[in-house]
Image (cartoon, rainbow, N blue to C red):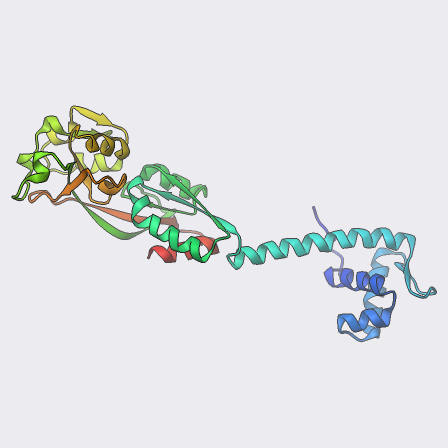
Length: 299
């Protein structure tokens, strides 16, 4: 809805002047309150009345009063100014990080590290900003960043688009994740791939980025990527491992997701695979002030 015609020179300054005259009942007092000379205020009201085609004030009364048409006009002008001031206040609060929201996508293993620490620090500094977390696989997170459902995302490899910019922020080495009572957890010597029983492996569904990395790693025996048990999330893998139901090949940060003392991460001497974590943002637009400030806590 257009508030003013494209051909008018009338703006908020004219409305404020008219409302001040109405409140003060005097051109001279209104001019003093507005910090202008009376002649300038008189000319402002004259232009407004000329635009409206009718008198807004009856200048013969003391104090000055609005005409019937002027009263109806000024009532609408007051509502307009109130809404403008509210919109301006809201905008200033968003720009000043007093209110707003940040929608963040994250691979499940990124929620604990580095996201949780950044959230704690950000919320302490900006308590009026809501933080929304959506955990998912890299491809879906990339799509949600591109369609503006998310402000940004923390994800592993798996995104390919000119609309996205990916900045590497950390590297996470793979290793063996097992229960603390598993023989390999207690082994005093370095672990090698040949030590892992393929029948003990809890595999991850191939749609997951971690599973694809393992499947595409030529040096890894294929029987260590299949497993007698298959899950669709690292949470399910780790839950089973915490009950000593098997072992898994996972990045080190992923092993900490459920924070169980029963879960042990062991490096594998002949297995050098690293998962990189990327900060995904839109390449053709800037993050909101709140999102950019949150990103600063991650870098």
